[in-house]
Amino acid sequence: MKLFLTLALLFITALFFGQNNKIKEAAIFLDSAFISGETMKYFNPDELESVNVIKNDTVINNISYVGQIYITSKNPKKYAFISLEQVKSQFTKIKNNDAIYMINGAFIKDNYNTFKIDKNYILKVEITNSTEFYNLRNNAFKFNIINILVKTNENLDNENKIILRGYEAIGTK
Image (cartoon, rainbow, N blue to C red; front, top):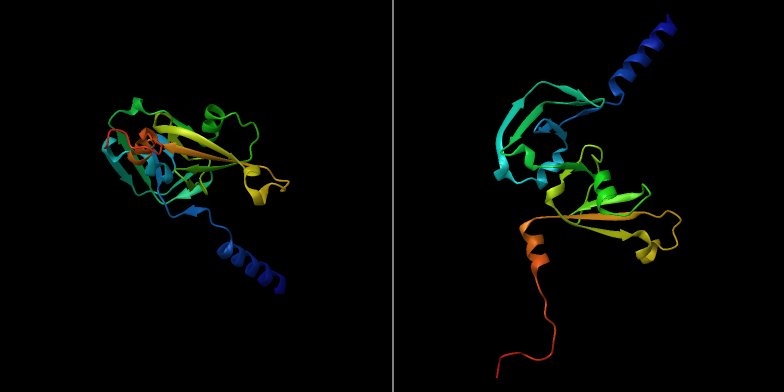
């Protein structure tokens, strides 16, 4: 009897305190493609046609989501979503897998597998190697930082700026 109570107590404790893979977010589908919630930060809201919310729990890749959001864009064929690994292979010459991703200077901390970005929305890709940092030069672990700049108004304005340097004013007396 003592063995039975011990096993029952262990089972109940494991049941209550076990890992739960339920995310408090909804699964987001853009034109029927599963995307990360972070992806929507880099999507123009004027391009949205409709939004449909379904409150049923769903499981995708062994992760449980509390609902589903289906978003339809005005022109679905306009977008070519690619993953971060595809950005690395198409826009860089990096061969190893050790990379840290940034978008507009903000680190992407999670959702590497589901994070997608529109290929046409990428302005340029900047690469920084860990050996360029003074404190990391002697480190045995080498990695690359891939900063993806997207076509926001601010980035486009900075890209189109022409800075003239000189000591003389031209056309003034």
